[in-house]
Length: 413
Image (tube, rainbow, N blue to C red; front, side, top):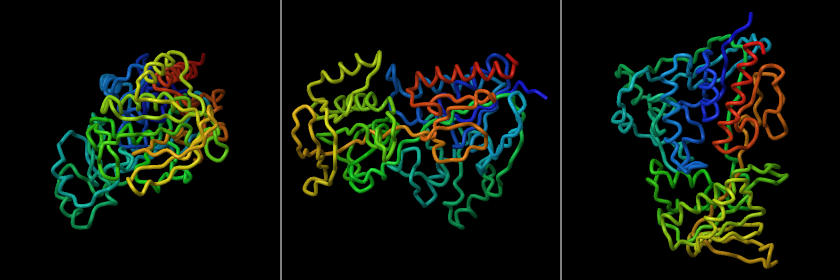
């Protein structure tokens, strides 16, 4: 029996786009997201290309479209357990993890603040903490707290049990849906910088990833938009960017992540906006700013305090005298190898598929890096960074294309 419904796996920008494109032409769409809130990586950014607007610029419009469209069924804390069938007729089992907070928009901030334990915030890449009861995503959708029961004491469990909207006994549950096509929009994750031991990752206090810098620059971030050193919360007077940190490297990620150069240029602009006298150096292998972004790169690099050096950083160590960092780097143009001191260093880590290293519950082909490269003959389509590294605009375009193919599948065209 064929189904005209469509499943979208992943609630980031590309997944939301694919779901809305299909729903707005009349198809029932199941949109599932493994995290408690929609928005994906875009929600964690300070600004995104091409307009350099905040995430709310695009996401709040998308959330409103979801609210106004009854064809979209949203499930958070949800994962696909199994997929059976074939194109046009899939039976999909989905598992929902317990949220422990019933639907509604009741303000639980005072209750959350009363809890004792501080838990590293995943949303802020451990630059800040959250409580076991939290809603740490700005303009969260759904606008509903989630309870991390594992981080409650027995006394706190007893206290929370008396609150009507909290259900400590909620259990995981599974349900089955029938769909005709599936869109995988599972997005990306930052490459684990702790693998980059030669670059000081995980060992040097003032060595951060590019996504951590996005959170430091964001007004809703842990420092309210003030870019400071994690070690002492002081404003850096000099910052180095290390491009291709773990990318284009057979020991880590073999591919170019496409957006890292543009992201570092964008973040250099954050720094000089905050402090026009700061010294910023970008160490790169190749600056890749395709198409419309070439003019952006020229504008940023025209700033007198921003310099790009073609050179490979071999090592980063702690500067014990200042708490800063010392980079050992060879300038390719001059051939000079030198040691350079900075207050802080940003590693431009690559975009790894979120599903890398996982076994998918569906029979589709993935490449050695974890990108989905097959499945279209089965009515299964990859969108956004599940398919290849893309910026936000191209992710949305990819999602629209995947949605069109999914619609054609369920309509038998």
